[in-house]
Length: 80
Image (tube, rainbow, N blue to C red; front, side, top):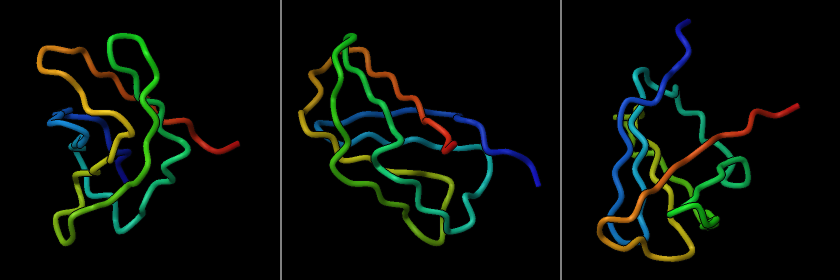
């Protein structure tokens, strides 16, 4: 089974969408494993959702809104 890779990151307000190359097969990642920064400052994830049946996109609800033109980055920490 191929490992999903990040294809696209899009942000609007306090919502961040991460689109992956492969379906996540109904696996909802833990919000605590995501590290999101906006202009280098941590922005905590308060909720995670996947739009079924199109489970290639993970939606993150951020604690703070992201200003237009700001740089947003996301990392996922594997368990272990």
